[in-house]
Structures are given as structure tokens and as C-alpha cells.
Length: 396
Image 1 (cartoon, rainbow, N blue to C red):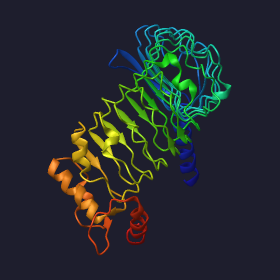
Image 2: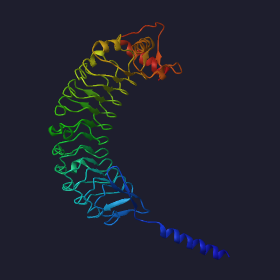
Image 3: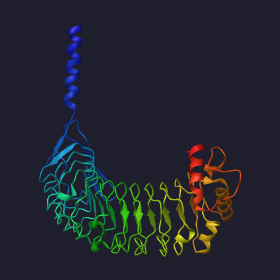
Image 4: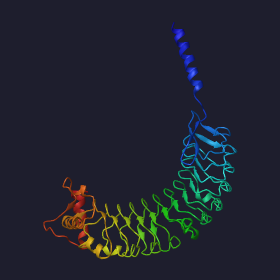
């Protein structure tokens, strides 16, 4: 009887095992742009061959995300003239072949989170209509990229190269791009703003992301060719030095984010005369002083000075901002070594002027400032060290 049970279980196991598919399981559907194909990973790594994705003249999108694909045979994505969107992210691709030559109408290509090491010179040449290319989180070495690899991509609007090693990239890598709007270069091991990101032809760019790199300084004339930039992000770098005219040419800039750096001093004219600048994030730095005059003739609405080294701000800081034409709506200033008298002045001012602040930090549940016997706001730099030391001893 026992032998019969064992045999039955073994036969059942074989039956189940045979139903497990190595190749991805694909199904047809209908998306926002038309017929699509969505695939789910099989049980094993897979080489994408012709036949998995049916040759449907009307298919507009193919999703092969996380399907354990290791390589793609030539012709596997052929005979799909209406194809506009391919998602091959989260696979194990190490190299790209001429797999896309028969998809001339492709608009969006996602190759993020693979293991791609290099880009063959003519790999994208057939994609003359491509608007969005995501190559983030691969192992591409910038110094090994040939400068003409993107030369046919004249209509690219979105390019993400984040999470690769982009030091040593040719200066003219993006010289063919004429319509770029967004360029992402986060986590690229860059120790300076790369010249290929500020090439003269990129004057259509509106967003540049350079977060989580190793950049230490921002020098003048960096953005002289980037007049249309609306947003620039330098979060999580090592920036200590900023020249006063570095943002001077950015007359359309709306957002500048410099949080999580090592900034101690800011030039007084750094943000002046940028009429559309509405959002400035300087949180998580080492700044001790910033005058209201630094924001004169800007469109500043949201200012974040949280987690710095401020013990005081100039008297009537928010009122002086308003007198200079600034209409501040949100102001964050928590996690600074405030003198209690100075913090009290700020709280009175923001409440009176109806400026939103992170009030939950100031309801008496935790210490937020320090004071001596004299409850006066000492607005002189020579008092800073005393109050910072006191704050660190009691609160920090």
C-alpha cells in the first residue's frame, strides 16, 4: 500500500513538473494606444526568439518586464509595424543586438534594470521616431560609449542614464539630440557636472537630474547653454562650493534642489533675479546664515532650510522677503540649533503672515531650541558656536 502511495505521488509530481513553462506566458489585450501583449516570466532564464510575441500588424505595446530574458535573437520583434512601446526592464540582458531594426515606429523603449555593459554603435539607428529611452540601472561604462551611438535619435525627449558609470563619457555623446526635455544622470559616479549634459545643442532641456553623485562644486558658465531649464536637482552630492553666477542664465528655472550636500556658505546673489524660481530646497546642509536679500526678484513660494546650522535668521526675515517682492507660501526650518528667542520670532512671523510651516514639530512634545538666562535673540555670528554646542549637548 505504501509503495502505491509513493508511486502515485511521484506520478503527480511529474505531471505538475511538465506543466511548468520555461518560456514567458504571454496574453493579448487592449491598452490605451491599442492592442498590446503582456508577458509573465516562466520558470527559467529565456532567450527571446521569434514566435513568442505574435506577429500582429496592429500591436502597439509589448511588456516583457521581469521575464528572465538573457538575450534577444534577431527578428524576435520583427513584423510589428505598429509597435510604439517596448518594456524590457528588469531582465538579464547583457548586450543589445540589431533586434529593433524592424520597429521603425517605436516611440518608447525601456531597457532599465538589466546588465547591459556596452552599446553597439548602430544599435538605435532604425529608431528615428523614438521619444523616450530608459537605460537606467545597467553597467554601462561611459568611457566605452562611442560618441555617435545616439546620432539618429533626433526626436528623443526623455533619456535616463542613471545608475551607470558615466565618468569619461565623450563630450559630444548627445550632440544629435534636438528635442530633449528630460535628462537623468543620478547615481552615475560623476565628480563634476559632465560636459555632455550641458552641450550647446541641448537648449531644449527643461529638467536635469544629477542626484546621488560625487559633485563637489558648481562653477560659473555651467548652464550658459541651458536657458530653458525649469528644474535642476543636485540632491545627495558632496557640494561645498558654489560660484555666485552659476544659475544666472536660467531665466526659466522654477525648481532648484540642493538638499543633502555639504554647503556652508551661499553667495548672496546666487538666486537673485530668477523671476520664475518658486521652489528652493537647501535642507540637510551646513548653512549658518542666509539673508532675505538672497531671494530678491525671484518667484519664491516654497523654501526649505530644514536640518542646517541656523541659530537665527535676520530680523523680520519673512517680512523682508515680502518687501522684496517674494510671496512665500511654505517655509520649513525644523532641525536647526535655534536660539529659542530667535525661533519664537520666526514662529510669530509665519503665523501672522499665514505662511505654512511644519507646525507638528513645534507643539511642545520635544525640545527644538536652546536658551541662556537672557531670553534675547543674538543675531551675531560670533554667538553661533556657543548655541550650536549647547544644542548638541542638550538635544543633538
